[in-house]
Amino acid sequence: MVQRVNSDNITIVMVRPRFPENIGSAARAMLNMGIKNLVVISPENYDLEKIRKLATHFASDVIDGIAIFENVKEALASYNYVVGTTARLGGERALVSSPSDMAKRLAELSQNNKIAILFGSEDKGLLNEDIRLCHELINIPSSDFSSFNVSQAVLLVCYELFLAGLEDKTKFSPRLASRHELDGMYEQVKDILIRIDYINNENPDYWMNKLRHYFTRLKLKAGEVSIIRGICRQIDWYGKSSYKKGAEDKINQRDIL
Image 1 (cartoon, one colour):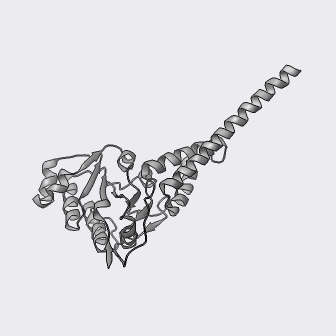
Image 2: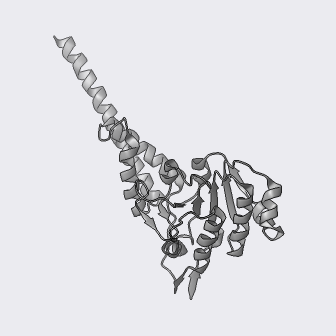
Image 3: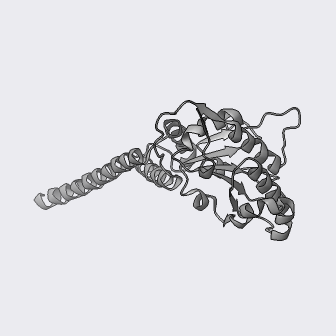
């Protein structure tokens, strides 16, 4: 028995799209491959008439169900796994896989986890701050000209998801920590590491990216995030307690003298 990707748990996220026609074309491409959840973040020109024209009446349900956000972090807060698409490589985009490899992994993850797949704007793609919110990145292989129209990229990724499946019954896939839970943990870890002078306060994101890559490979569950945050709270309590005790000892020494 082949277990398919759970398309109900897959959401296509278009980040800062410039042209409403591309939103419509992407919606039609999604529907062709059985995916109906579409999120649009901070669109430059959200013209429903133009969107519907390219989507055609067949994808009207997808268009009617579009969720619009102004902020990427807010839009991704409820998702357990985030995949970003990129045409550029290197720098913070070092860990990149192919759409087919990604789709095979999502066949298992999608059974019990909400997954968002991000597509950037037509001219700039995803920004570095968007990339930092992703668990993994994918790059669509191409010939000399590597730039795809965003709706074409949506179709190619959705096609790979449609084809992907796992032979036989898969092992249990636990719920991963949501984007909101992870972001809270990262902020708490960053605050603690700055205060104990483990990372440079002038450029903390550079060092935090290394920790993000490490934790991403572990695919943290909600309970594990809670443990890490509990450790941070204990470090914070101990630091404040030690500081307070040191200050009291100094006062007592002055009183004795």
